[in-house]
Structure formats: C-alpha cells, structure tokens
Length: 452
Ligand code: NDP
Ligand code: 2IT
Image (tube, rainbow, N blue to C red; front, side, top):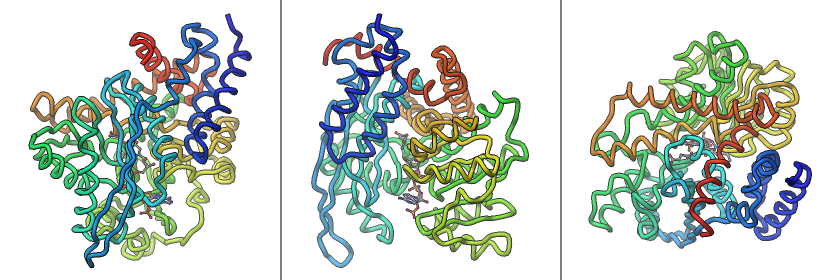
C-alpha cells in the first residue's frame, strides 16, 4: 500500500515529465496540474490506479490532427489558418467536445480544453469521450460569406476524422449556430450522408435539440443553486457578476433572472457593463446575437441604469455570486481577493478554467463555494449528448423534457462531486470531488479495455 505522500511524489514527477514532453503549452500544463494534484488520495487508496502507464496514457491524447485551412476573403485575398482536432480519450464513448475559433488558439489551448473535457464528459454519465478542436481564425468583423468559406475549408479536411460514432464536434468560443450550420452543410455535401449525430448545436428543424443553446448557462446557474442549497441558501434576491456576453453569459443571465437573482454585469474583450437594474437579456441578445455588436452598444441603448467601463476588471463590481463566462484565466488572484473583500458567497465557472490556480486557492481558503468548470459548465455537453440521443432515435423532445433532464444531470453532478469530496477527506472541495469522480469513471473503463 503506497501512502498519499509517496503517491503525490510520483504524480509530481509525472507532472515534470508532462512539462518537458509538451513544451510551450502553459494552459495544458495548468490543466494537468489542476487534475493530477488532487488525485493522490484516490490513487493511494485504489492500487489498480497506480498501475504503471495508466495516468501516463490519460495525459497523452489518443490522436492529434493539425491541418492547413486556406480560404479567401471578400476581396479575394488568400488567408491561411491552422486547424486542430485533439481526440483525447474515447474510453467512455466517441470523442466529444467543441470547436473554438479565436486568434489565441494553439495546440496547447486545445489540449487543455480536450483534457478538461474528458473528466467533464465522464461526470455527465452519458457515454461520451473527450476531445476538442478549433482554429486561430478570428471571426470578428468577418462577413457571413467569409465565415462560410472558412467553415467549408475547415470541414473539407476535418470530415475524414469525425463521425457520429467516432468524434462529434460542437460549438465553443466563436462557433455558434451559424458556424455549425455551415460546417454541417459541407460535411453532408462531402460525405453524401444525412448523419445528424456528427455535430451538435444544430438548428431547430434540422436535427438540433431544444435547450442546447441555453444549456451551458442554465446548467451553471443550476449548479450554483445546488452549491447554495448545500449551505442553506438559495438564489432569490442574490446579485451576480457575470463576465462575457456570448452564448454562455447570455443564458446564465437569463436563468439567474428566472430564479429570482439579478446579474448586474456583462463584458467582452473591450470592457464591461454595469447595469444597476440588472442586465436586460432581451436587449443583450439583440445587440450580441442579432447585430453581432459589442457591449458598449448595449450600455448606450439601455439608458441611465447602465454604464460601460472600457478595459478594467468586471470583478471589481460587488456581488453575492460570480459566474465567469468568457475565457481561461480571466479571474486572477487580485480579482479573487476583491470578490472576497466584497463578500462573494459562490463562484461557479461557466467558462473553462477561468479562475487561475492562485484564485481558486484563495477562494477556497476563504470558504467561498467554488464550482469548477468541468462540473459547473457540463450542462452544455450533456445536452449535446441528449441531442445525439434524439438524432439516433430520429425524434425530438420537448423543451420541458430536455430542461428536466438537464436539471437532473446538474443535480447529479453536484451530488457526485460533493459526496466524492467527502469520501476523500475534502468536504466542500468541489475541485477534488469533480476530478476524482471523473477520473474514477475514465480510469475504470481504461483498465477494463486493456493497454491501448
Ligand atoms: P462566445 O464566443 O459565444 O462568447 C465568448 C465571450 O467571451 C465573448 O463575450 C468574448 O468577447 C469573450 N471573450 C472571449 N475570449 C476573450 C478574451 N481572450 N478576453 C476577453 N474576453 C473574451 O463563447 P461561449 O459563450 O460559447 O464560451 C465562453 C466560455 O464558456 C469559453 O471558456 C468556453 O470554452 C466555455 N464553454 C462553452 C460551452 C458552450 O456550450 N458554448 C460549454 C462549456 C463551456 P469578444 O467578443 O470581445 O472576444
Ligand atoms: O466546453 C464545452 O463543454 C463545450 N464547448 C461544449 C461541447 C459540446 O460538445 O457540446
């Protein structure tokens, strides 16, 4: 029987090796640290998990695809972007995870997202493996025709690597309903197949699931509500700071309002908006989803209750709850200290890895309920799996049914994380609970399926 401290030393050595074998991938190193640093108790308690090669296999993607994506802009100029698909782990089901189009995308970013996705998808209990992809293409300011040509070129290579039983992409930053439409159209044309289950986040009427657009934001609010319930509180009357103004932020704001709370901020990369009356989600949808505008336009139209702050930190705005919903490492140690000073009760991650390790440490030390992304934002991929189920059965469920399933899944994830943390002497630590519970499911499947 190895002790926890011996196990910790072994995992530390492995982390050093991961850094050497994957140079210049700081986000991937960060994600690997965050998971492996919490696994010592379970690996020490269950000798089969210490089997040589198990964790080494887990941190090495099964397959990594990198490709050229050439496309022409409206003036006829040729651009060359890079495409990525990292198929990380398929022990529990077909690779599943979104595509991100953002200039900051590189292999390390996609690997961090794919690694997180393995454990997140395991937590949903829905039989989906982990993967992620995307491109350094920047859709901001591009016409619909340019986005379409880019998506067609991207899919012209990607199509040979994906399939309803192989790898099922969806949206992420910069990839929403419009992009999924163009990608699906090109897949169908190249393969000559109506294979609805090859992508999720499709439109209503051609294989999409009701509530998929809402699912990540709604799910995160349900997770935050479950954390509050555990402490004898609820959402009624609470104020919230929300970052971002895209898919996740919008439906986070909507669900908070539906449950009696009030989101007073939203943001984008140019700055943030404080709206004392609470963000008007219909106006935000109009500006962001219909007009593809910026949050300063929201503030201009909203009138005297709202003001736009260029640059700055949205976390300076006092609130009971914080739901970061933009991007990785957007909430650092200073922001965490400010939130704590302002009396924050819970932080729930709508984005993937938005809080830095130092921020997480500080929040947990101060007794703030902290919901890690791989648990709190799993509602999106969970409803993607429900979309795959509907596609397979050639049926579509009502919004009420999907929402009911989503609520059950989020409550189950909360309970699993909470109970697992208690079982491993870390009561209230959802980071440890989520990592260990996700790890157990994937590791058990990998052990059963042999050394592959
Ligand atoms: P969107 O593209 O719809 O919106 C992204 C928002 O975040 C925009 O407001 C954008 O502002 C802002 N943002 C993005 N990058 C940066 C940056 N580097 N600095 C400052 N602001 C930034 O993406 P989503 O809402 O889909 O995704 C948001 C987060 O949620 C991501 O971390 C994603 O991985 C995660 N997530 C998404 C899921 C989904 O189903 N869509 C599921 C689970 C997690 P700007 O336009 O100025 O760049
Ligand atoms: O990070 C995520 O979980 C997503 N972007 C959603 C993935 C999906 O397959 O729905």
